Image (tube, rainbow, N blue to C red; front, side):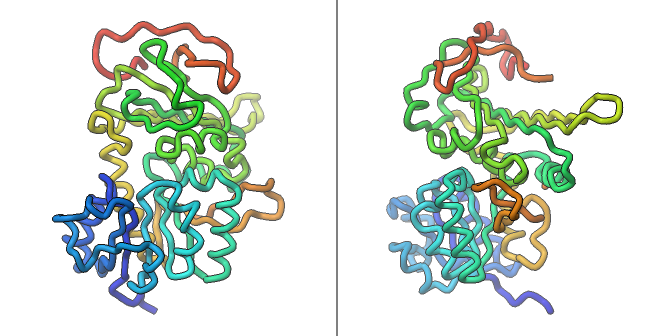
Length: 332
């Protein structure tokens, strides 16, 4: 049976990513069978002059009156914490802030609401490269470790709590290294790639996937994401290993890289057609009985050199300072 159309889409958040999605939905939506039915932003004034008044939603609690099929969150993890379960009462939900799912209470509430209202929770892969490969390897029992390092200029970070007080002490400084769950509350807008990795690898989850956040003064116009994974030793004693290095162009001080915007649009298109969502899209499901608590499952996409640490939070060993490179770009 063919999907009915058009699919009604609402967008929550009107920052750089939200603006791009709204622009594409208005320009390309009709020919793709998509209809934009509302845009909500915490500061309504930001929508003035660019979002038609008829599409501006003043009260997020009233989104049900627009009868959306899909609500796309591209605002802040707080929206998922506070309103995610309520959104699922009315529509499928595409989560653009997966760091929110590092909170076990939020994850449980979304799963319960999804099951109760029969609406799906999708998670965009964002800047995570190789999502499907990670997912397949994990499902086959071949994933032993997963480490995601995100590096950019300090101006690109929006940090909270102890990390907000961290200072770069050299050209390249490790601000955090440890379980992704411990990073999400303090870098909610800079840990989404790591959170997506934790969701793609439920055998490790938020407590087993390691996240590393690095402030690099040389990365003024890009975000660099390194993904390192390994499997158990094979017959020869050597382990399967993969290391990807992704350089994502970004405007100075921007939280979202250029390539991530394009990847998210593709995720939106997939979530709008849940019968065949396609690659690059994760779907939150109830954890398997054998999974540790708080590790939701997903259905279906040379280590850096020595660095300086900003503090002993979280506890780590001291690593020497790197000299600044003489040419622009990553020192590795």
